[in-house]
Image 1 (tube, rainbow, N blue to C red):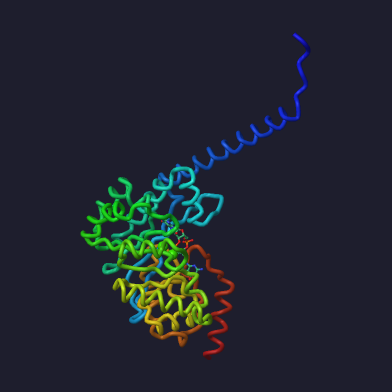
Image 2 (cartoon, helix red, strand yellow):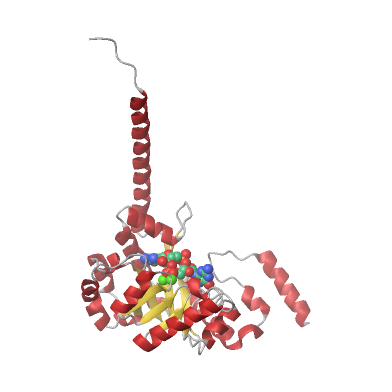
Length: 313
Ligand code: C2E
Ligand code: CA
Ligand code: CA
């Protein structure tokens, strides 16, 4: 037996690659453990509710449940859900978020619907069915996120037919943001179509967006008799434009930020006032942050109160 041969450059490269793979595997394990903890729906998973408003009357008709993960590192919810899906835990995390939201359904003012986000894979899962079996279907709207395609619309339609016949309403989310939302609309005949934020943003100044918004409204209203909800309304001018295009429902920071359920009734009364009074309302009412995500800056608030008092004095 001769002396041990020196490692070649290839051996060294392979060793480095093996080390990197091992590290990736460890990272994946850590991320998996974090998501598994989140699926247990402990206090690190919370739900905020954003009002959905009738743009003709100012009345609030429903609220969308939006998950918040308070565990570090901070990531927006869609990133957590994408990560969970990547690790094969997408349905678990979505059902967990959905169950947290449903726990608050009894506190939602009567007459308002609860709008829940779910991907096609979750909607056809037994866990989702089990969660939905416990709630009054007629108070729930299911927002189908468009990011995933649906291979077999017939099977998908059958999976939700019974829930729909019990009163559950189906919404197609993020319409106008990609091709699959159109396919969902054509194949599933949703009760509600949610116009994507990208269409609302600047609809007041951009003729192309206005034309597309108007076409989407005609498409949804005339062809499907669906209700249209414009998402992401941030300014009075976007609101006025959408109203003039005949959009009946809307959602966005200008009408109400996502907030805890306990804050929702106060927010609803302010929204109605804002919609009916429009820009004539006191500037102060527009600056009070209602979103617990955004802590109140007391210094700024006092300064604003001071300036409003001085002006109205
Ligand atoms: P989405 O379903 O399209 O939700 C609307 C997003 O727009 C929310 O972001 C909301 O906070 C934000 N938003 C509302 N009004 C305005 C506005 O006026 N301007 C702007 N710029 N944004 C506005 P969020 O809460 O960060 O959620 C992001 C996405 O994460 C959601 O998009 C949804 O796809 C997903 N998501 C959130 N919660 C859940 C959940 O419980 N389950 C599932 N499956 N997905 C969820
Ligand atoms: Ca949504
Ligand atoms: Ca959306």
